[in-house]
Length: 343
Image (cartoon, rainbow, N blue to C red; front, side):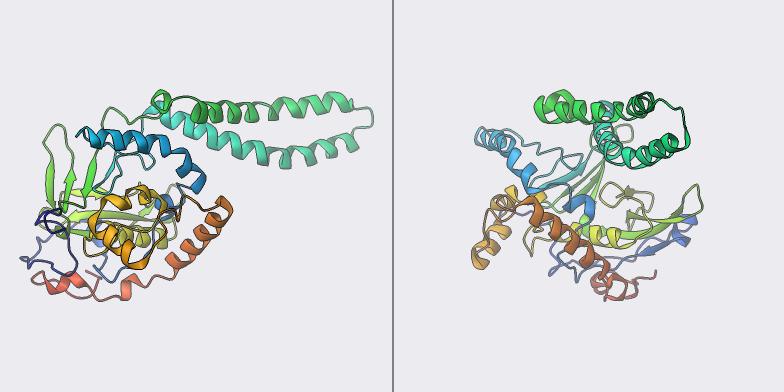
């Protein structure tokens, strides 16, 4: 196991001592709170947990078999695009989706939502109109309502067919920009990709998480999770992909815990569906699962109904996090870093 992980891999039980952090200021600093390290809980944000129900996991078996063949041939494994990038037992990266991919995802979501909710609005309006019109043509009014509703199920069905019956390569792809950030569990390195100025890589333990506040057009303040390099503050990673902007900070706090758990080689991979298939490829995770007798088909064999209940439980667990009240593990290894997270 010691030969598998690089010396720079993040181990919460063996963090190296580091110099004083570089001072930085500005609007982002004044509206952001630095989050403490360590003492994590087995939680995940909704974007990381809810995205892969068991039924979708089972449909991905063919993709995993293809990955197995690539490994046998010594070729690089690119992982799945479920989280908009590369996801394996080694790497978690983000790449913005291509325009065509976003189009079909939005079409499917909008078509499904409007198909289910539009009738709830139109039908009462239809009956109200019929009752108030003494000489109205009921059939004509019905066709009028149907005319406005019918496009939505058509859009839903077409997008469903594209996403489920056509090859993934036809509609699922990343944009031309490619990967913008990458977390590598095996090496412990975090990389910000910049095709013009060159990539920037640094150990995970040199990146601090900040919970900021950004205003919306309506004036409501939303929480935003970012990673900022301790010694080069201009290097910033926007983690809105795994913790979307929202009025509830619990989702961002859960994402920070999950990210630490993924990078920490002193513990197994997070026990969420996204990493279910890859657990057998990570030495620490294999050791843990053997010791605990974990069912290798825990997520794969689960029903979607049971999974939905676990999604609710995960959201409740995230709301109960006391992140701000934790002692900061990194304060014992960085000179001048206060133990309070309110830095």
